[in-house]
Image 1 (cartoon, rainbow, N blue to C red):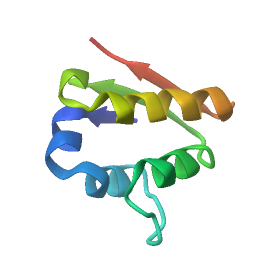
Image 2 (cartoon, helix red, strand yellow; image 1 turned 135 degrees about the vertical axis):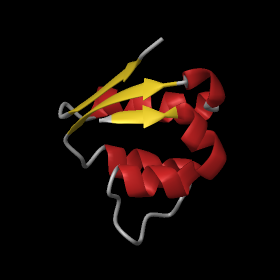
Image 3 (cartoon, rainbow, N blue to C red; image 1 turned 30 degrees about the vertical axis):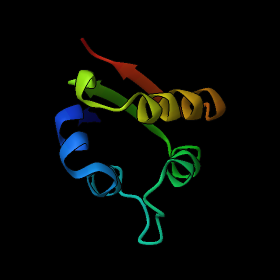
Image 4 (cartoon, rainbow, N blue to C red; image 1 turned 120 degrees about the vertical axis):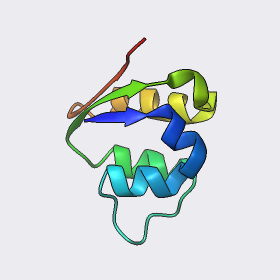
Length: 76
């Protein structure tokens, strides 16, 4: 799955919720993002990463370290 940093910047957690098929109760904050990422099985490629806050990128990286079924890569 490919995520677009420009869309993350524009629509934030709403974009992530829809793109990653998070549940309706997704809290739309970094803690909720981490929790949901730790529960999914997915390979994520991030494009346009310059548009994404460092905290969001760090959350993806941290979740990928915790979840063996989540792969996260930044494409330049």
